[in-house]
Image (tube, rainbow, N blue to C red; front, top):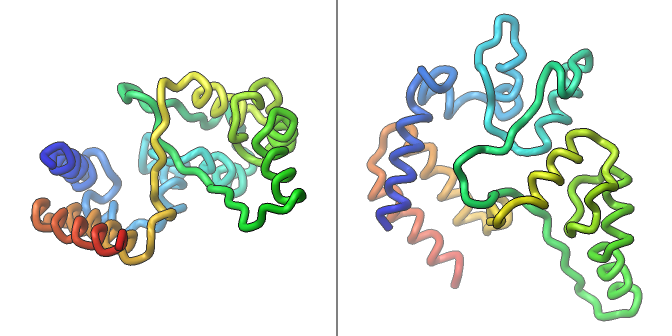
Length: 196
């Protein structure tokens, strides 16, 4: 698909350029996950911002307890995208017992969603939790999510290991300058195999 190839080409251009990333392609590939977040807060700062998920605020607060959310750091919805993309945890029940059904019903229902929000457990799986968050970051995340025009799951860790590992390696290979079309063919073959 040409759109996927174009997306990888755009990502390569950005992720390999030291003007946009700390250390160019080498920095993109070799910087440890949390270290990438913390580069914004080094003295002097090594980066102006970092693209990361909603959990980053907790990591920042733990590493830099003197910094205050909303004053020293904040986040924004990425502009220009139709809808949101994000991670999610999936809930499955392997029992049709009354207790299992009651738990699932409670967690996905209005009262469960509201209590989930009050506990600052993360975003609730339903819009009825809005207005019940007490943490300012969760309030902002909830507002962004509930006003989104659409939502696409980032399948990330939810995909099987052979495909997940191949896809991750493919991103790294592209950032290191490998051919996009052949890399995507390898990823597509791993996806086909994982769906068997």
